[in-house]
Amino acid sequence: VRRRATVRCRKRRRGLRSYMGYEWTEEEQEAFEVEAVVGKMVADGQTAYANQGRVAAGVVLYCIVWQGYPPDMVWYEPGENLGSELLREFEQSLAADAAADEASAREDAELIDLEESERMPAA
Image (tube, rainbow, N blue to C red; front, top):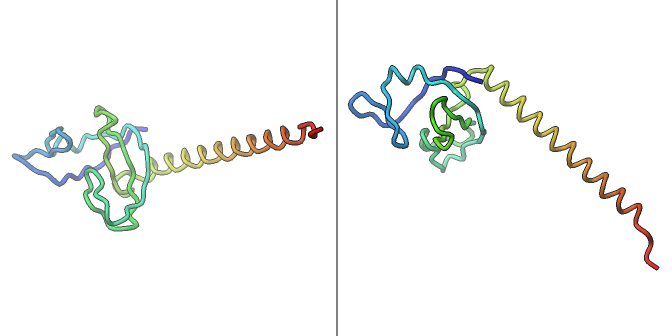
């Protein structure tokens, strides 16, 4: 899912923004599009998170990849910077993955129970 999102960076030089060796102008910044939301975390108030720096405890940050940038350029944004549709799609994806994991765990447990019930008693 691709969406336009606002980007905030802490470093400024000669009208440029910079992060992990990449530089861009403020005009280019407005055209950044999210390629994918790849994770979610709750800030602990102690850890500095990539582009966000230290964030207050309890703030939910989403890990994103920008279109046209490498996936190892991890970027964290609070939900209000990403838009509700993009977040809803990501949360639905998380719920679907959790449901699939739960179904798989149930199947594994059923197989273990079946194997144990079919074991021959020791002689």
